[in-house]
Length: 137
Image (tube, rainbow, N blue to C red):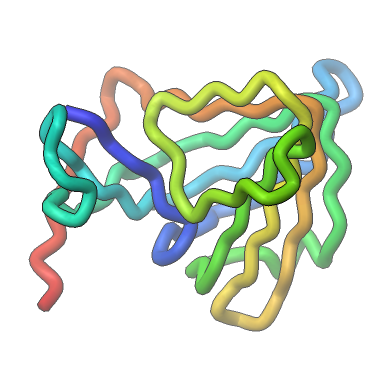
């Protein structure tokens, strides 16, 4: 099984700007919208659901936007790798490890926008993270 984290429909609990000690910025998700796919299956045949309490960590990050307002549902997200300007991603596989410069743009349902520029990033679900199937119609 492979889980793909989608920016759209994920929910942000809080954004923690770059820390003085570790230089990392964090986006804490209360829930991450996930598409669970069986190995080798067609991407559109995945099972939609959620994983609670995900943490996105950005190395040497620069955040642009009203951080205190960047909460709640994400309406749209776009990840761009600096080395591949034409490549963008609306979802990433979990666990996710990006070792090259990137830009993540998040548009929130409340109208706020957050732009994150970072040297690298990662998101690894904890051992306690469980997949919750979505029963939305």
